[in-house]
Structures are given as structure tokens and as C-alpha cells.
Amino acid sequence: MWNNMKTLTAIVFLGAASLRAQDAAIPQGAVNVNLPDNSPLTVKSFSVGDSRATARGAALALDLHMAATLLNSSTRRIHGVTLRVVAQEVTLGGKGSVTYPSLNVGPGENFQVRIDMQLMRPSSVTGGPLVQVDLDGVLFQDLSFFGPDRLNSRRTMTACEMEAQRDREHFKRILSQGGGKAALQREMLESMARQSEVSQLAVSVKRSGRAVTSAATGNEHDAEFAFLQFPDSPVEPIKGAARISGNEARAPHIEVRNNSNRPVKYVEMGWIVSDSSGKQYMAGSLPSADSDLVLPPGRSARLLQETTLNFSAKGQPVNVSKMVGFVNQVEFADGKIWVPNRQNLDNTLLLKVLPPSAEEQRLTDIYRKRGIDGLAAELGKF
Amino acid sequence: MKHPSQEILALHAGGDLGWMARWRTARHLADCEQCTAEVAAFDELRDTLPELRQIPEIPWNRIATEMRANIRLGLAAGECVRSSGQSLRDGPLFTGARAVVALASVLALMVTGLMLEGPAPRMAKSSEPMVQATVNGIQRRSGDQAFGLMHSGALRVTYSVGAQGTLGARYTDPETGNVTITRVYVE
Image 1 (tube, helix red, strand yellow):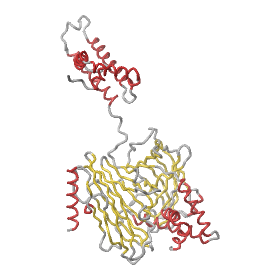
Image 2 (image 1 turned 90 degrees about the horizontal axis):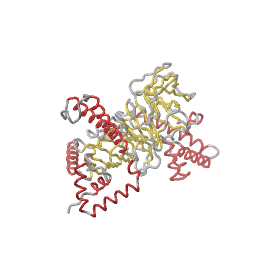
Image 3 (image 1 turned 180 degrees about the vertical axis):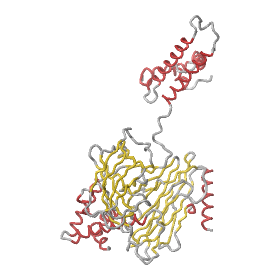
Image 4 (image 1 turned 120 degrees about the horizontal axis):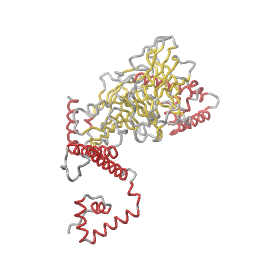
């Protein structure tokens, strides 16, 4: 009944906004937040604040600002939450997710989340709530999981948690060794310097075909991947290539072999590209298709994505000169996840190319705001 | 007295009006000092800025050359098909062959005009779904529909791309202090 009322409100609102073709506030009923009955999270408060719909020619631009306070109503500490955000029937296929990793929310504690969205849709289309927000998953401290996991948030958040544990241990080790807070401070400064030096690419991705905005030169050719090998990696990249044309890479594929004694169900390769001057950029990741891969020990498989990636930096196309791949993440059939250790990254100088983990980013933010004492106190909580 | 518009006067100054409009404007100018002065001012401007005669984005001169060439081609073709002993004025105005040649010339002109002045190849827009970063967020765009997750106010944003068709942005929310990862999907 409540959902029907919300839907009706949204329809009335959309119709009115379309007819009036001018700026209008978006009512709270236009957003439907749906948590399952047995959810470990409860919505304590929710608002759409200063959300507006504005007519732009024949289209309607919707500016949605959602804020919610969520309560951990479970008996376990929550370390990650993923919400699924769908613009129902409005922008066909408009789907996204918002993940909050590196949380540390105890039972009975609250935390705040914000979702800012922009939708552009023809003003003639009406029907359904504007946005549906569902819970996709909750990751607990013990790596147990709750949720429908439609967006593979279990794997994503578990990998984030593995990286978080790795990086917290790294910083705690520095703090506990001889140098103490002074050494930790140096490490933080180095991390911040690295973060500021990491060059970012602007990448657009589309399914198959050539990207329309590329500076593709037309002489498409196969370019081979070079690989960084990690001694303790359960999966070894063997060979791979992508079709390259100027600043465009198409249909990347990499063959990998499972060197471990456990079956693997997901592999994700990191992908670094160099421009003609040798400058390196983290281009993205090449994951195995979600449902296809079952890789028994000793066997090989091919990771292939029929997509086209288009690279640019600071508004200029970045022509791909070289490509380097490395194993970024492996999920075993039992759900356990492997990520490269800190030594792997240091030894291969990947730290200078890769962005920091979510946890390292959070810890450096804490250092910026609260200083070295605040950071040491934060590390002490884990 | 009703004066011609500035556009008409400017076109008249450049000799770009059709014959009827040119005749009407000339008649008006004969009795109107104000408009004559306007036309003179446009003439001066054209002399001062000769580069206006070749605006880079609109190659009028090239179009004119092409058109003249096509007209000559049409006339030459007409000469070829015309019987040798028959003068232009003696025969009927529209024989079958002449009509075909005239039509071909007009078509050639239209095609040339369209090729020269038609819209550039549509490289920047595609109705095919794609994910991309925008000024303050990431979005999935398909034609005139867009779905974006924004990170306004975030200072350091790290983007991550999945070759299966995802784009993610990671940042620290300036209001909640939470590390937040947004992601949009091509499909």
C-alpha cells in the first residue's frame, strides 16, 4: 500500500513536472528505499533534501540528493555496505551501486550515507518511483555476508576488506617498530606524495564496436600484454593482447593458469598502459566473466571482454604504446579472496602507478584531519 | 518608410542577394540616405576585414568555386548532347536530354553542397550505452538518457574501470567522512 502511494506520488510529480516544464522540488516519495525484513540495517531517517527537477528542452534533468542514517541492528560489527540504486523505468538500464567499505560500525551504532544522483530523461516518460534503493549486501567483521549480492558486492567488499587488513597491518607494523609515530608520519607523507603523483586516465567504456569519441587512427593492430609476476600469486598470466588503435583498446583478452591447489572462480587482472613518452597509467581491470569461469588447479582459462575502452588525460587522447598486466584479485571457489601483498606492490613499483586502497585513502584522510595522534588512535581500534 | 533589415543590407553590400531582393533593395537605397550609409559601412568593413570573405568554418569561396565548376560541367555536358547544327535558341527549351543534364547538374550541386556543409561525422554522440566520467561524477549515457552518480565536493577521486563495462569512482565523502565507492554499469 505504502509503495503504491509512493509510486502514485512519483507519477503525479513526474506528470506535473513534465507539464509545467520548469524547476520543481522532488518529493520524498519519488525515492523508494527497500531493505528486507531480516536486514541487519534499519533506516533511522531518510530525506531527499534539496532535490530538484528541471526542464531542459524536451528532457527533464533530475538532481537527487539523498541522505540517510542507518542503524546496525545486528549483533555483529559491520565493515561494509553496498546499496543498489536503480532508476526504474526512467532511464532504461540506469543502474548503479554505492559501496561504503572500511566501515567499523558496532551493534546499535548509527552511520550516515549520502547518494547524489543526476538523471536525464525524456519528459514524456512517466511511471514508477524515480529511484529504487535496495540493499545489495552487508559485510561483517568476520567476513560473513548478508544480502542478495546481485552486484557481486560480497566479492568487492571482501577484497576491499583484505586490502584494508593488509594496509592496516603495514602501518601498524611501522608504528610498533623502532620509529614509532615519527616513522608512521614519514610513511603517511610518502603515501600522500605517491597519491598526488598517480596519473589518472579518463576512460569511457562501451560494449563492443569502436568508441565514437576516440582519436583512433584507423591502423588497428594487436598489442601484446607484458606481465608482472607475483611469486605468491595463485594464478599466473600466460599471454594476452588487445586490439589497439590510437587511444582505443578493444576486446582485451588474457590467458591465465591456476597454479594453486584450489579451484578458482574469479580472476581480475590489473591493466596498466603507457603512452609514447613512457608515462604509465592504471587503465582499469580485466575481470573474468562472472558466471563462466571455473578454473581447477593446473588448468588455464581465457579472460575476454568484448568492450571498447577509450583513454584520455586532461582532455587529450592518450595513445596506447605499451600494456602491462598483473593479477589483481583472485577468488577461490570457497569464497576466499587473494590480493597482492604489500611487498608484491613495492617490489614491482606498482605502488607508484596504482591508486591507494580504500583503507590507505581513509587513513591518510584521518592523518590530514586529526594528525599523527588521531591516526595512531584509529589504528588502535583494529 | 519601411527600411530593409540589417541582414538584407549586409547581404546587398556583399552582392549576395537574389535578383528580386537586390532590385527591391536598390530601389529603396536610391531614395534612402540612411540605408545607403549603412551599406557603405558594410562595404568598408568588408574592405577592412578581407578575411571575412573566407570564414574558416564555412568555406564559402570553396563552395562557390565548386558550384561554378558544376555549372560549367552542366553547360559543357549540354553542349555535348546538343546536335551540332542546332542553336540553343532554335530548339525547344526542354528536350529530354537537356532536362536530364539539368537535373543531373542540380543534383550534383545539391550533393556537393550537402557534402561541404552537411553535419560533420557524428563522432561525439552515440546512442549506444556507454559509461564515462563527467565533471563531478560518473554516468551511464544512452542517447538522451543519462544516469549519473555524483561526488560533488570530493577532493581526491580515484576512478576504476572494469573492462566488462563498469566505471567506479572512489572518494571520501566530505560530509560523512566515509570512503565511498560509486559504480555505474553499461548493462
